[in-house]
Length: 195
Image 1 (tube, rainbow, N blue to C red):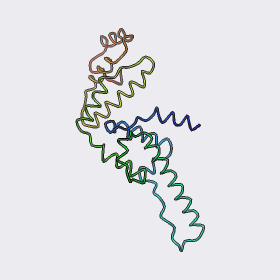
Image 2 (image 1 turned 90 degrees about the horizontal axis):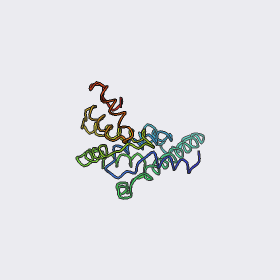
Image 3 (image 1 turned 135 degrees about the vertical axis):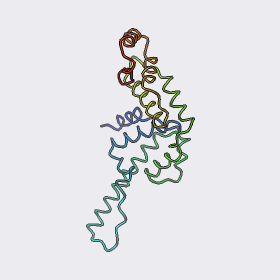
Image 4 (image 1 turned 90 degrees about the vertical axis):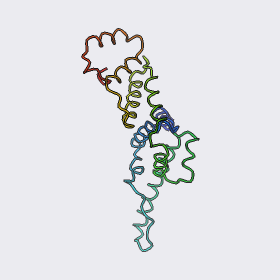
């Protein structure tokens, strides 16, 4: 896969972290890092090998050196990918941090607490969404992600209301279909997933 294609995928797959969108960004960035085989470093499951002891056989020194270099390179990749998707005003949090895992933890500490502003931002995003004819699936996935973030913040919007918000966001071309659906469906079955 070409480097420009990967850059394009990163640009479209992961939002820019601005602080308010941390919950969405975190899931997108985690998925991106997983797709690149870098999540094990972030999660701490793959740790850097300690420096080789002087009394180790030379073959172990070489193996240990290669493992350390591999870890350093993967950590650098993860670190770089994360910083590419962070607003410069937010990147200030990373001053003097040297590993990708520590950057991840710093962002979690700084933005992981869901306050009223973050909740309102998610709510505003979900109710102001419009479903386009060109990319309805992406729009609906984004709306669903907003609902998931609100649920994670213990703001539970009933399923029927989620469905109504989605129906309200649909293009006018779907009005007749929506009317027919609403007239023939039982209220208990009206959910976001059904619509």
